[in-house]
Image 1 (spheres, rainbow, N blue to C red):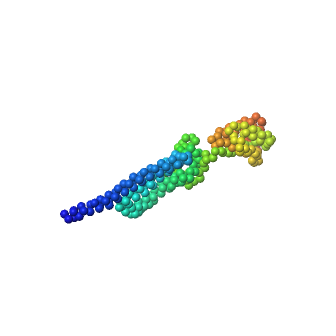
Image 2 (cartoon, rainbow, N blue to C red):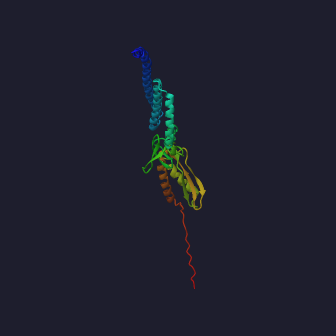
Image 3 (tube, helix red, strand yellow):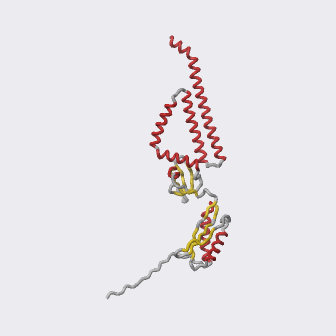
Length: 275
């Protein structure tokens, strides 16, 4: 009976101490959750205003929310009297074991973070990466999805994309079309240049600035090679290239300017009859 009475006497003090801890833990949890949601929304709004890709916006906001939630959980446990140092040590050891078992996945995750932060490419860009080429459809945490021109879907690990060379054809507003046109050695080079210049400058999609470059590139083994380098908007690249190659050939034919092609002369010798 004495112990019960002693416990009853201490009950108000115990209730005050532990009740305060529980109350503070609840407040920390509520404030932490509110802070996580608020910061995630704030980061999302800032990224949207900066016209960041939607994949990047979702990825970064989720990461911010997860990190703040983890710190909130540790703070709540500490307020309740749980030894968080030992808990962090256990979680660290478990994380190390999981990390060793999932090295490839963690490498892809880290590469995904780098792709999101440095943005060498974004959704909608046409790129060459990880040994393949296509339009970026999505950059997720572990992989990057590309769609090829013939409508094949390719999923490449982020580590293969980030650790290799990334050629982004859509990063700039303008691109240069590089073509080589070979003509016969008998052709008048001034006339050839005038014809090609007229075809190039007459195309409505060819930019006036910078000016196209049309010059003799090389005296080849069977032809005089002209380099043709007009500038176009990136979206018009293939349209202009196809049009110019066709129109240059037609105009050269109209002007009776020959375009040489490899030929082989075969000489047949009769063997002497054997007597």
